[in-house]
Image (tube, rainbow over all chains, first blue to last red; front, side, top):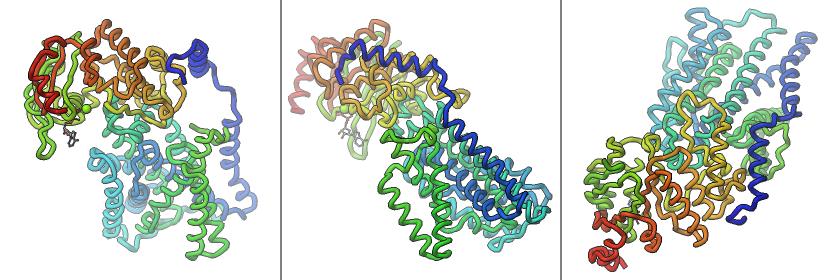
Length: 345
Length: 244
Ligand SMILES: Nc1ncnc2c1ncn2[C@@H]1O[C@H](COP(=O)(O)OP(=O)(O)O)[C@@H](O)[C@H]1O
Ligand SMILES: [Mg+2]
């Protein structure tokens, strides 16, 4: 590149500015694709209503929505801001216990209290962020692991809610044919909310600041970005939808028990999904969650619920990451081969 | 009142006193040079002024207001911009995004605004045109040559309309033709009222551009004066010969 831009180059750059700011994007296949996908997901339960034979699929989709929620939310702090959290299941745990307690003690439906559970998870994230995110770097990762252990310890000892053994929650009074539907829609809404939030942040001033922090925190601070505030906010916000999803999940399982949130590797799986799809991209966590759930299910169906299925999933992930080191969406974007359908920013 | 004033500022790293009871002022409207042998503590002074380091002792006043101990982003907001000795950029962002990250629009109410506002884009492009790399606006910053990265840093520093710009060795690793351009830019901005504090090794550059010049050695201020006075000061010659 010449140091002195030629006239043509300046004109070209100006044109790009002009095009970028004035011309409205054409109605794209991408929007159509996402819209159709949402319609299909919204209408899918009709099959169940009609035949009653789709409970398995409803369950798998609902479980996928849960994972999409977790991955897209994690990506806000772990992807955009570059701060790896190994404690995101804590947010769902807190959400679940808040909504569960409100159900048991006050009879309030988690469908009503889920947003509140999200807010509590947020506040919790704010508090934890205030303590740990004012400093920089890898201490945060370790602190999030400690957070998982401490929260689990706390819940294990919350005797009013059954401690380690947990407590069962009242069933939603609906016939088996319909009982999954409210959960399905609730979780779908949560997932859509999480992805939309992550999309909005990616294209906002806030997102630009978080990306700056991920790339060079010192430079970001000198650029005038209040990096501590941004990080703490990002962490807190990334707890909202996991908190909501956690509330629905416990009610769906009909019991509250620490292990449903703190299974071994639970938090690490969220990270894996995002790495698989592409850290810091909008579509990546969604794709990663779908793929990981699908792979797991495939290998469980093949080999049963044994070590073989974990090994199979792990091996497949490894192969994907060898070919797509930045995750599928990240690597395709770097090579400028990302299909427009997956280019969400 | 001086625009910037350092008052008996000291910074230690373990046993090493990198900046030792350092006092000087930068008057508004000047291009002040800061020279001294390697390890004299010049970059550390910049880190103290920009808030990346906190002084152990002493005060730093900007426009009469005490800024030592304030976080860097607040100091930037008050009107001090800086560049780094080794150019730093947000590598995975575009050149344009790099500049816009330095825009002052980022308070709490602005957080959900679009990452690149129209007026910011126009301003950033104008700055990139000013430093001559507008044609690279949509390239990833890591693809720039080192000299271009230095120009990008200058554009970034200008995005928030600072009153004072700290340049850490703007000529380092830059070819002579590019250097001429950087000097022109500094002079243009200076005429428009921006104050500069410039660390530089290339003596001919300092002597041609800066007035006054501050000389540091071993963390202390040795001398301050016009380029001619500095060149004839025996203490300055000593410091350079001693370090050579
Ligand atoms: N972060 C740091 N930690 C420890 N020592 C440092 C640090 N920064 C600078 N120093 C030391 O302080 C002294 C002054 O360094 P510096 O300010 O970079 O000098 P200059 O920019 O004048 O060449 C050097 O001896 C350097 O090794
Ligand atoms: Mg230096």
